[in-house]
Amino acid sequence: LLLIVLIVSINKFLVYILSNLAVYNYNNNGNNEELENNLQKASKIFKDDYNYRLLSQAYLLDINNTLNKNENVNQELLLKLINLANLGVEYSQKAIDLDSKEYNNYLSLASANQILISLDKENKETYYNKAKEAYEKAIKLYPKNPSIYLNMAQLDYLLDKKDTVYSNINESLNIKPNYSDAYYLSSQLFSEEKKINEAIGYAIQSIQADQKNINAYLQYGTLMLSKENKTEEDLQQLEDVGTKIATSIRHFFSTESNIKMLEELELLGVQLKNT
Image (cartoon, rainbow, N blue to C red; front, side, top):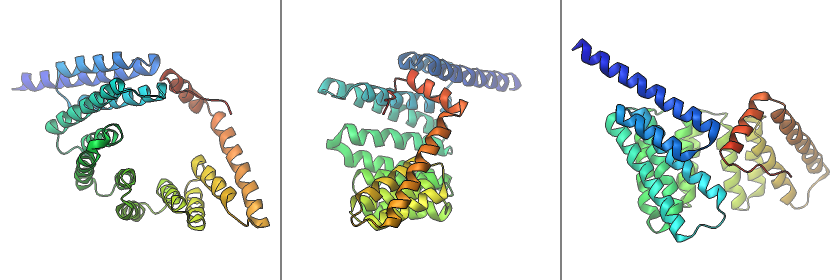
C-alpha cells in the first residue's frame, strides 16, 4: 500500500512539473499548439484536476489569441473556435470530476461557457445558465470571494440582465468595500444609461479604492469630457486626472517587471500599438 501511495505521489509531482514546464515554454515561445500537446501528454501520465484546468485555459487562450489576430471571423474559423471552447468545457468538467471541492475548477467551467455566449449566440441562454450554475457552485465553496460575484456581474452584463448585475456588484462590495473593479464596472453601467453624474461618482470611488487603476482614470476623463456645461472646477479636475494618467503610465513603463510582462505579451501575439 505504501508503494502504491509513493508511486501516485511521484506521478502527481511529475505531472505538476511537466504542466508548469509546458506553461514556462509557452511564455518563451508563444506556441499554443505546443502548449496544448504538452499538457495533453502530462494528462496521460496522471489524471490531475490542476492539469485539466490548465488545459482548459490553454484552449481559451488559443481562442483569444486567434481573435486578436483575425479582425474578420468567417464561418469556418468560428466553428473552430466553438470547438476549442467546447474542449475547454470538457476539460473543466474532467477537473471537476476529479475534485468537486476545488472552486477554481468551477471558475474554469464558467469561463469556458462564458466565451461560448459570444461565439454561439443562438445558444447563448444555454451557456449563460451553465456559466451561472458553475459560478454559484464556486460561491458555495468560497462564499467570501468578491471576484466571483464580480465575474457573475460581468456574465449578467453580457445578456443585459441589469438587476442581477447590480445585485452581484453589491455582493462583491459587501465582501470587499474598497473594490476598485466593482466601482469601475458600476461606472460603465451608469455611463451606458446616460447617467453621467452617477457614472462619474463611481469612477471617482474606483480611483480612490486603487489609485493605480489606469482604466478608472481613463473612465473618469472620458466621462468628464462628455459632460455638458463643464465648470471651471470640472476642467481643473480633468487636467489633474490627465496628469495622473500620464504619471501612472510613466510609472508602469519604468518598472522592470512590467516591461518584461509586455515583452511576454508580444510573444503571445498581443499587438501593442503606439499612440
